[in-house]
Image (cartoon, rainbow, N blue to C red; front, side, top):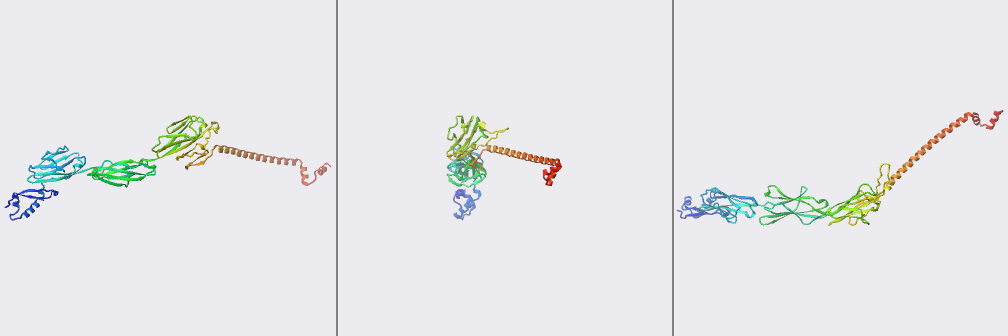
Amino acid sequence: MCTSTHAFAHTDTASQYTMRPVRSSVLCRLLPAPCSLALRSLVLVLLCITPRCQAVQAENVTVMEGGTAEISCRLQNYDGSIVVIQNPRRQTLFFNGTRALKDDRFQMVLFTPRLVRIELTNVSVSDEGGYFCQLYTDSTHHQVATLSVLVPPETPTVEVKQEAVEGGEVELTCVSPRSKPAATLRWVRNGREVPGVVSQQDNGKTFSVSSTIRIPVERKDNGAALSCEAFHPALGGQKRIRHYRLDVYFAPTVRIVPPTGILREGDSLSLTCSVTGNPLPRNIQWSKINDTLPERAEISGPTLQISRLSQSYNGTYLCQAQNNYGRAADHYTLLVYDIVSLPTTSTTAVPPTPSTTQQITSHSTTPTLPTPGFAPDPEDPGAVVETHSAVPYAVIGGVLALLVFTVICVLIVTIWCSVRQKGSYLTHEASGLDEHGEVQEAFLNGNDASQGKKEYLL
């Protein structure tokens, strides 16, 4: 006979089984009387690892931070016993459907003989862990539902260690300060990935990730677009992107936009100084080399205007600009023509091309002034080449053409007159011989003219 009132079957908690009391009458029916205690214990363990010993079942849950988690406990052969749900800190949340912990984020949404379900709203990483579903009958049964919380990364930020200057390098760091598991970062420029150095820091239950790149920069890279992309399992194949535009600092460039055509006394002059640079120079200075600006000169931002020009305003005008990374200047030489001295024709005036109205651009601190009578080489703006006015050549060419035409006409007339005179002489000579035939005959016979005359008289 079995004398004990209860026997116990035991398994490890990690294997999700607990100690279960079993009535002696059941044991006596299963085992014969002469069985040893050790054999009885082994049979009880084998019986309790069968599914029938799992009176409570729970499922693991994964949810994103800020979302809502549903924790379910499935019951088997429920007989109205006590059901308790505890949090990872083993604090009782619900006791048979009654709230035990004052946390309004937990709500009992379902309590039936087969299923008990609670709901947790606004989940945070601190809520992560194992939730215990316990059923108290003659024995205690429990299962653990593990709650996992995913923390998707926010849109990453871009940090610049030092400013980008033309001819140097820029170091950019893309930072995703918080994610779980750690986010994956990637730099992209013009559709191509730029390799970066990745570092990761563990902040307890979350991770901080950064990716650093170093790229050389030139003036042309100012405004170039880059992007940092963050990937994470919680984003469902999507990505968080931070766009960034390079800000490259460089020295200014200056160019004076000259007027078209020639300038006469009484005309107005308008010069515009075109300036580039990063940062863009705010102050643009106009001046006249070795002289002061005319009293009629007006400066409006980058524009210099002079009304009613006169030859006294002739000279070289200078536009200068600078920022923290350098300075630059450009020159314009003004030449005002006297109205009466301009060559004209019967229709329109032929505008000369004065070499002194050309400009020379200089980006050095100390500008080089253009020499009058010289102009920049179009293939090399920094070079100076000699130029000549087109007016003297046109006049000389016209005079030479007129002289050549006159000489040709004189030659034609002279030849024509010579031919006419020779033909008239021959005609008169033939007529004289016919009237004085005897003279011609005498001349042909070689006789003396006086002798012939004498014989004629006798």
